[in-house]
Length: 223
Image (tube, rainbow, N blue to C red):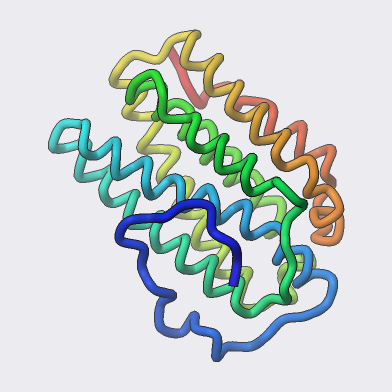
């Protein structure tokens, strides 16, 4: 069972079929994934809380979409927990979860628009990380249960990016929001740096991934 970063109101149980009774994984690939999942899970926990908060502050139409995203983030949290229960006991580098928790807590200041811009940048980076991990024929393909679950999470996150960036665009994106989004990705890259060894086991080039995370996609936040 992985370590948690946040107490999430309304946290859901691991879905049926994802319980501890499934196949167990061992070996270097499973150990590397076990180290990485708590960091990714920390983001899902934070996102559920963040989207709940944003939904309470926004108009009815946007609030409904934000609540839907919050529910999907809770599901992701439960799915990640389900995978973790099948993995060996392994933890990320000492202090990394505390750093990750502080990072996610820092994203919510300065108003809803800035928060959404940061979330769009962050979730787009998470899609990049998951895409690298799920490269066809890569080591994760040997974990036949885990790979499809992570693919589902990636698909959902693509939708979250689309919704968040559309909300930012309606409010009027500007250079300041883009700078804040870029800073968010720089910080995430720094958080991921200690995971280099685990990424290499999962056939992901840490340096190449670092460059991709740090680069804010050109069309993500237009103004």
